[in-house]
Figure 1: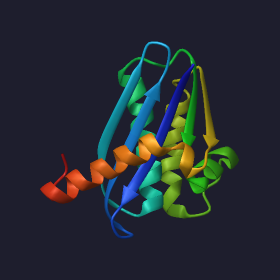
Figure 2 (figure 1 turned 180 degrees about the vertical axis):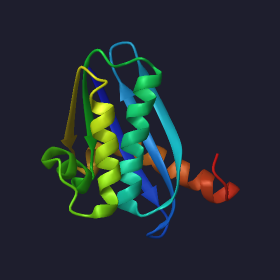
Figure 3 (figure 1 turned 60 degrees about the vertical axis):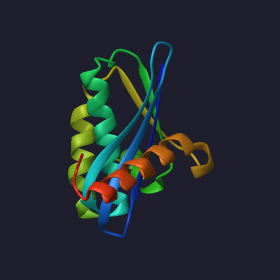
Length: 137
């Protein structure tokens, strides 16, 4: 089983955004920070989730149970209900559904911010790097 922790940080709303991804498993422990471009905080939370799934595909980590942990209630509820109340989130939900078919078992779970410190720190690092270079890295 793999546990994936995702979080996003945005300066302004919308504004420059960065994401953090922590992957924990029996034979893998990765910490990644990624640029997410200019977007709202909620969009950034969806973008980092999609980035995490694409990263797992690249690493060929698809044949086991994967539990994604996010402190974004909007993201978790959208996926659990398979319904995007905000039309801006529908493309992310559609992308999630397309990616989901490539995994044996993919689950998402909401966690409080206090349990997502690793991904939060990485997201803030990504945002800081973005702000320092003022360009995507």
